Image (cartoon, rainbow, N blue to C red; front, side):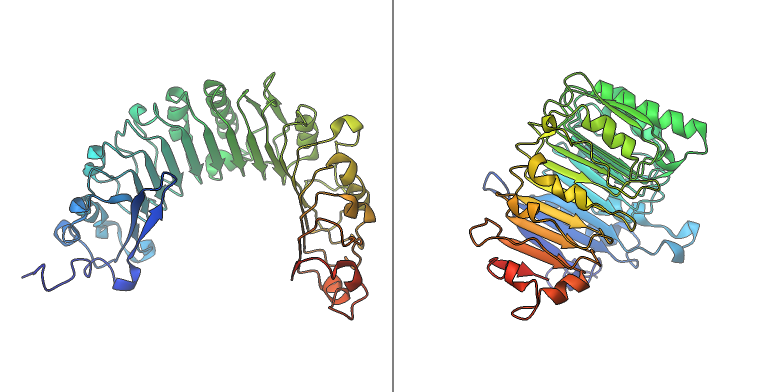
Length: 427
């Protein structure tokens, strides 16, 4: 018979070194507890799970339930995850729930009793089919839940943040698009619904749903991220957008910033896309508001880095962070020569994967506000600009640049005299 006083009630659920419980300092200064429970595969019924006594732990604000990833070792009839989860009932004070590796079809019924729950995250729940009705949820994150198709309308009305990755169907997003009207953050990536270009159904349907969602939330949406949405070709965003990140969307040709849609844009990232997309977006940007910019690599057989910011009218006086990603063929020394006139107050410059570039022009040293210079994977780079001792540069980081590292050897390298006074140098 189990005795509470003599045996740790967690022992049947997880080994001691798998329990991760610690205090998180919140912005308000109060403390909220995060508890992570790693459920072992030998826990198979509700009675064992109840011994954890989660329902009496009133100080838990964020509960993480993580099942061992052993899907390939269990047959169709061997999943007891629903019983176990029903036994891991949390206290109603719970505000955030994360479920990982759960192999049941339905989440526990106690979740609907969590009246303070505002965020739910599901990861690798490959057999889960439907979300329970959760009318107060503000943040919903779903990743690698391949069979999840249904979400009640009531789950959508309070949503502020939606993150969906690797979904096989557009049904979840379609339901959200019909019911959510106050989103501030939308992040979409991967999955058949995003990647398919051969099926006109998936292609047109996904693009249409995203555009409906963007229109419905045009006054509130501040962050939009699209990753591997290869079926999407044209989008229109609203006036409130501050952050636009697009990665590996090869067929996306146009993003229309609706009328005043660029007025507040602070962060722009266009990577692994067509250079024509950069051209259409850059023509609409209010350069005075942009603070962070990530560009490249770009698709197609091109040798020069596309640069639509050449005219004096395209100066970015408030941009302080620039990341440039090259590719094997690109030869873009002229690109670096334009940085000083285009970004006069740049503080951080990251140069990544420019394998054909052999030297950086001295004009980079005229970026008078530059504090961080990071160079990665530039195999043939062997010459740096000379930074005067009075320059503001505080950090120089050189990673996987073998020729440059050899030439910058302390005291003996021919490039050492250019950088020896920089306070922090990292390799």
